[in-house]
Length: 260
Ligand code: ADP
Image 1 (tube, rainbow, N blue to C red):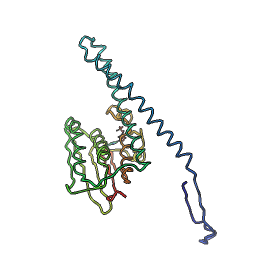
Image 2: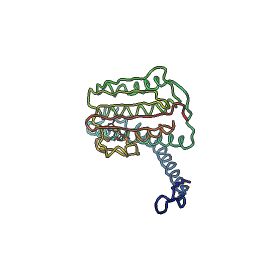
Image 3: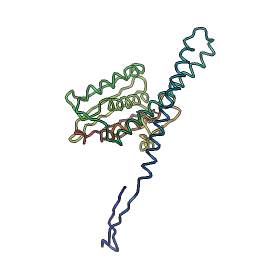
Image 4: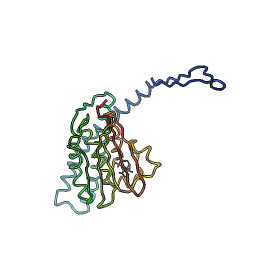
């Protein structure tokens, strides 16, 4: 049940009552839950055929006797199958994280943030090297927060992968972690293409993409930022974005320091 209340004023400022509006959200919640289960089940079922296709295509590609024209088509199948796999993996991750947020079942532990961020950097090392991007990481070694380390690492990897994808060759990315009074702030900044303001409010929606064709070419699934948002919620935190087209973007995850 969602309730809203507002004072009801008569002529002038005389208060003549209170207006209370109650929204029954049961049906909406039920629909959401059916959608979540459906997506999770379909994604799970898709994994088996995708794996089978990958195995068969890999065998054919490795077969030296196949003719080059056929090989070209096999490589297309292989690439598209990998895309499908990435999509299904992201959908499964999203369902899993969302489920945990709703059931409040993500375990948080007070640990150092630096190793988590270093591990995210290591995961992106080859992408960084490919584009010759320099990554600067500022995080004091004694900074701790109540987090779920694998989840937070995944969120930082998603932000980093985007920062790399939407940066120019030989660009620069900065990760800064700061301790605020009540929160810990993790900020991933790039100096790439940036995002027009009109897109910012919808950026964290699943499948929302500024430029579909470009993002698809860069290998995106359109789910990366939706995952980041849910990870932030799993920590009872939030994620925000600020960006200037042509200058770059800055994504900020704010986590409560005590995890409450
Ligand atoms: P994708 O898999 O398409 O990257 P995301 O959910 O990670 O999906 O991001 C959604 C969209 O937000 C992207 O398609 C891209 O248009 C935009 N975006 C995300 N991060 C950045 C960034 N660092 N710089 C510019 N655009 C970005």
